[in-house]
Amino acid sequence: MAEAEGGRPPVRRTTDRGIATITLDSERNRNALSAPLRTGLLAELRAAMDDDAVRAVVLTGAGTVFCAGADLKEVAERLAGREPAPEAPGMGEIFAAVMDAPKPVVARLNGTARAGGLGLVAAADVAIAPEDTEFAFTEVRIGVVPAVISVPVRARLQDRALSRYLLTGEVFGARDAVAAGLLTEAVPRAELDAAVQRVADGLRAAAPGALAGAKALLSEHGAKERAAEFARMTELSEHYFAGEEAAEGRSAFFEKRRPRWVL
Image (cartoon, rainbow, N blue to C red; front, side):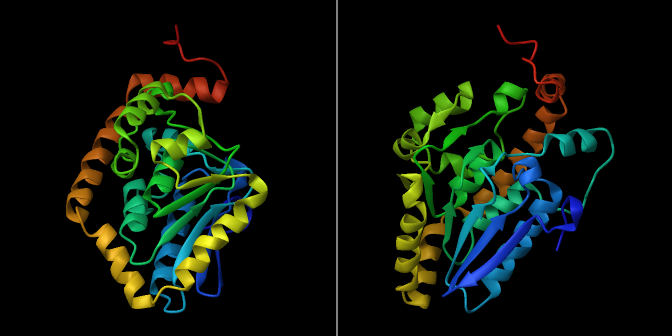
């Protein structure tokens, strides 16, 4: 298992009555998709899929943020020639592992999701969040494009919402996320666990073979095309992350100021 700072695993997994809960546990950087977290997440997903006792997976986060997206400090190190973990899976590989998983994946959002974190939400089969959760595709505001996450996101969001949120980077709420197709359900925060439990109980009641067959029906169409699209979008993402606007965007983010292009 990959380790975060301090030696604690950045991802943990528990199982209860056939439901494996995988928790992103890297609060120090808001559960950003760092190399250790990506490595741990893919390992735990694969372990859950290989476990005959597991019927489905619930994906959640520790702390107040579900996932903040890419780890910008890690991106800066990589662009400076200091690749922190060249063997770590890419974001496209993570999203594909969720989308093409042979068992259902339910996203239980504990809090805010941004940028790449929304890729995880869109990749899941079911996504439930508290009504006070906020979302944003922030890529354009730091000088990059939401390339890799566009593969799962395009399969979920309605066209008009997709255009608005990807182009503006504005913050939107959970009810808007349901209307857009990003979320399955938004509930009062006190009712989150009960809402997830209802879905989990439904999955527990399903015959294992039939459940696997139904999941295959949902994921089989376009799997090969998605693989090619993830590869193409990864190239596009790297191109923008290496650009001048992205460098300015990262500097502005770390210095807590507006980028120079803001009017």
